Length: 186
Image (tube, rainbow, N blue to C red; front, side):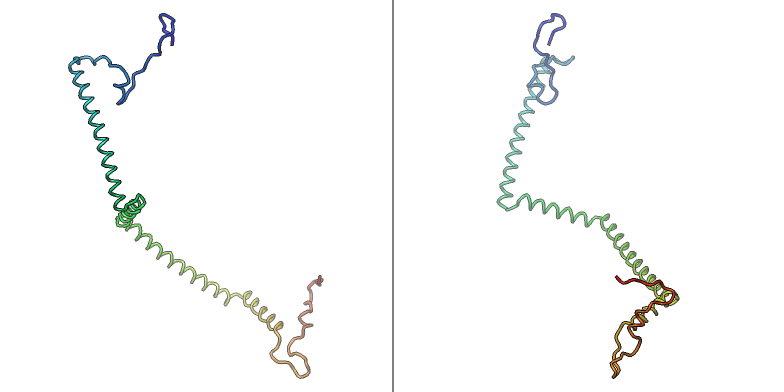
């Protein structure tokens, strides 16, 4: 970087760090106003002491975590088993909660009401179709035509001694009603 006064190349200006590593990476800063060198020295010593305690606690924690892992391994407790146990406990907590019980009861009642509604609707449709079948002349006429066609197509149960069948002949089935346009067979 260039210095504005001399115009020469200088070392880059260092920006002080912020955080827990700031003291070790940046040289000592001037003491805050109103703080003596003795107070600053005491704070520096306390800072070093607290950092040492943190380091010691981290080492103790790591040792305890290793001990915990060894005990779990000896007991046969795997991370998968722990996950299953946690899931089971969480599910049990959920199913015993008041909100779950209320929701379950509400859904059960809604299911019963829906079942009753569908049953009633099915019965109503069945009744309506029966009413239409019994009351509508078109439906009765259609039903009679199907029955007539059935009797014409089905062979008779007995035949006469002359080899002729009783009932309408096949010719009568093939005749075209009057007023109908003739159809071609292909």
